[in-house]
Image 1 (tube, rainbow, N blue to C red):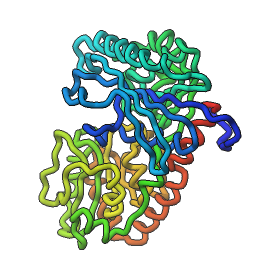
Image 2 (image 1 turned 180 degrees about the vertical axis):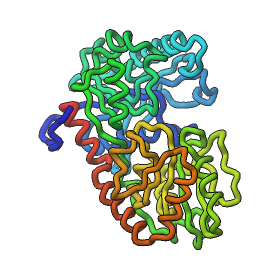
Image 3 (image 1 turned 45 degrees about the vertical axis):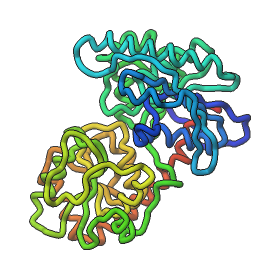
Length: 395
């Protein structure tokens, strides 16, 4: 679907109810920050935003300490209300009785959301959900129940709708009331259309974005000093889960193959695939409000990932002017072009190594890709994306 991208600020502002499965909090401040960031961008456009994030008490006993009614403000001082009605879920993952567990979890999630949504003044309101399970399904059902337009943002790395719900059920019942879908990549759009659960004319493709208030280039030397990174090394960076999908250990193998003591890598994240190489100068997470210093400290950003929706970390690295090395797969094609990146086979360890060394030894090419990232970043800010989303939602 194509829309007129001209943003008009001449309508009475609508209320946006953001349905989330997880949302940053004092226990998990870095969980699903991308949901928080698009919400903040809506709020900074002048929309009243209410985050409705049912809180599964049995997933983490610390969840009992979270406030059921809370608030936060954007960097620009705009207020957002957060509602966390409590429920019990049976999870989404694993093969055993998965559809039954997902069905019960979704039903309980919707019941919890329903308890509070009916107390909200719903005049001039729309629902915006991230992502399919259970939020997208809940958006469709609650939208129908209360006569609201309901939209889902689709950004899953892989399509799991058939396994969790069944495509026929999604098409005929669970997603039938969605007004529209924002797909983070052409791949995400194709997941839905190939499965037949959402028609193509309901979908618009808008990749992940970043907030200019938080993610922008910092001085490289000062960033390295701030994080305690070596000042005299060529640093290749990675940010994401330490797992096989994201490829942190494939990157580690590639760097270990480089016979150059000046080349090292920094891996920001957490997970089971912990880097152990002596060439790794950083492991562990960084708070999101510090990430721009991490990206700015790098010479190259590399992520040989197998699957993404649209990778927010790559977008943020682009916004900080990093040359990108990543996967030659369709989820990257909206954000990685010849002007700012080298695309490789994520299984080609030698290809990753060669790309790193090519950029280390070619200052002009590295500078060209860095400039290309900053140009690409102008199209990827959440300011611009939020305007396109609200235009799509006709609010």
